Length: 116
Image 1 (cartoon, rainbow, N blue to C red):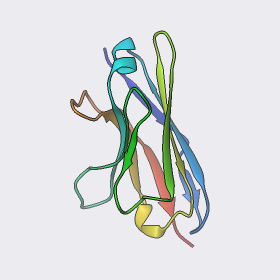
Image 2 (image 1 turned 45 degrees about the vertical axis):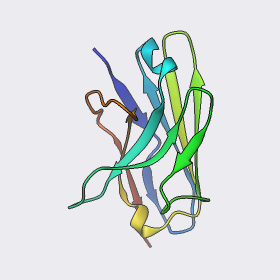
Image 3 (image 1 turned 30 degrees about the vertical axis):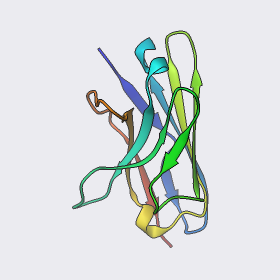
Image 4 (image 1 turned 45 degrees about the horizontal axis):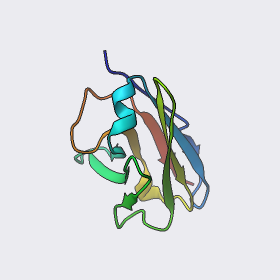
């Protein structure tokens, strides 16, 4: 069964940084674009960053210049990272990883809370 395990979230003050990690348990993910998504209370889940197999990245306007996505392809596991700098209260959400073009079952996500 496909499984995503997200980690690295927490509570931070505005302006701080966090690094999220996502372990994807199937080798198929080495061959597809992966993304980080987030869902804030009362809002729809949105794609905030994506990375192709060749390393090409794209970002939502709201995080451009502050977030950096990267990936590490191993034999049977892909790890996708999201470096988040200059965090703002509006970045508060549960963060998930998944494929960009096709979505598998969602993992538990990792909560990021930015507040004073």
